[in-house]
Image (tube, rainbow, N blue to C red):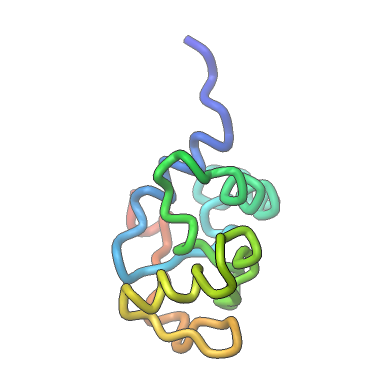
Length: 108
């Protein structure tokens, strides 16, 4: 059997992020045993378009919407998060730790 692609593993984790919660690129990378691959997780999110992945729920380690330029429209990423009850101010999630979902704790 062919080894699963890293991007596919990232998508599997991202698809499990609950509605109204967010995680970080680094948290996904660490969960997958590739702690130094946060940037690769970001690239995976940028390429997730047709894969039904909630990429809007993946942000940087302090809650900044660093991937927002990859969404159609000016504020689509922010709008999607706000539709889930997550407040965003100046491209950063308000009260980030309250909404943070850690795959290392939640999926073990």
